[in-house]
Length: 422
Image (cartoon, rainbow, N blue to C red):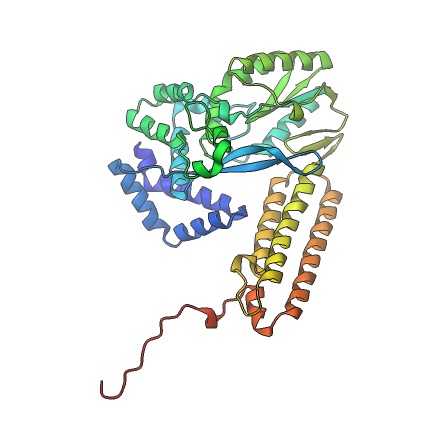
């Protein structure tokens, strides 16, 4: 508990969240980060004081139903129940995770050679998706001839919190900390009424954890630790990234047998596989297959076609929103700053930067050249539309369209020159 209360721990947690937010496209998230960053030491001191005094309370979070996509790219009726907690909650949750990483009894969950989601990067090593992809390539190099892959349906909503909390309680032997941990994974939503029937999909009961909470991957890794052990016994390799796993086997029969084992283990937790995201039958490693948004194609490691399409759609969406507001704002009125040219280009740059960072380990240079060309065309088309809109507007609107501050629009509080004689 003292480790969590430490200003050094809280500052480290804040820096991680600040770094992650650099690629966020949410204006609310970035505004909250900027506000905290105006005086981070003061804000961290307040958090540390509240935790030390036992007065810190996790504010209600916001439930965000993120629509899933159909195969043709259209929105599906299904959605992913994402949770966005206030910044101070996220900092404390991250500090709790940092504290748990120091507990020897939990080291096996943080250093699992077959699990890569939510696992801390080792010094001079890979982590997350690149590490998972490297593990797949190693298994192929070691002789695996067939692959089968699957996604666990609604994984986070099925994790039993009491089961994991019992494990945390035994290894930490710190009752005060366990209370904070339970509060950190408990979910209360501020927009329950707005979500209506969709609220039922969010993990507000004892079963399920919030997708978006930095502690959720750890809970999943604790729950599936024995799954990882059993799935990697014998002649097969099973690589898992949170709720996605891939089996690399010496034959199709071995891959099928290992998939049946996975189904049986998950059944004991009340979990099933997502049919639309799981392979129908084993594939040869020399055939094209996709996992974690990565296309493995007999020597090429590249972003999947779906990942490229999503990038283009996301960038085009930002440009369309900006152009629409620029066209519809009345002459003489200020363009909302977030839709100005500079702000839109900045947001788009964050999207492209985040995408490139995520796929930096891929090896198809020609594909990235084609993606660059596509991005350049989208940017060029947007700039052309901006120039056309600017040409039709009053010259006084130029600064607003561009996103440059105008002193005439400032809410000033001018002082008054005194009258002669009093």
